[in-house]
Length: 166
Image: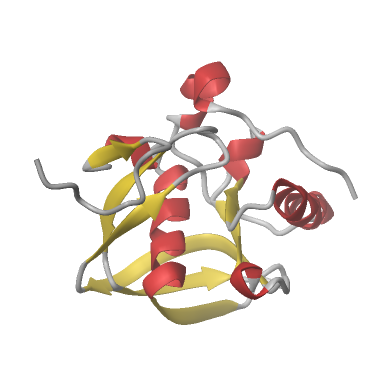
């Protein structure tokens, strides 16, 4: 397995702003990409990683659903589609492609998505809270959007994510 270079907004904004193309065939090259993305995500300590973030314009991302409990539960999403979204949550987001920054972002509280796995099988997932947020964040990557485009405000070191009274 290999650790891939994660592109940043500063150095590769043009690539990160492109729309990723669907995966038409799951080849050994795609399987290797998924394996390498997993190793890269774990080494970087992130929660999610889209293929575009490593320079591959394909509709693929992975999410580590166990990162909060210090156990890695990687979910691989190929050709994901958001089927439904409801409710609202606002919380802090960051991104491996936007290092050193974070901001408040409003996302749906619940989402339902369909996606393929590495065997080409289709699945649906219903997600809430953090997992729903991650699915939306990574899906945005596939559409050339970054969280900084939709954040309500940027947070700085002295901020804890709470609104301050003026």
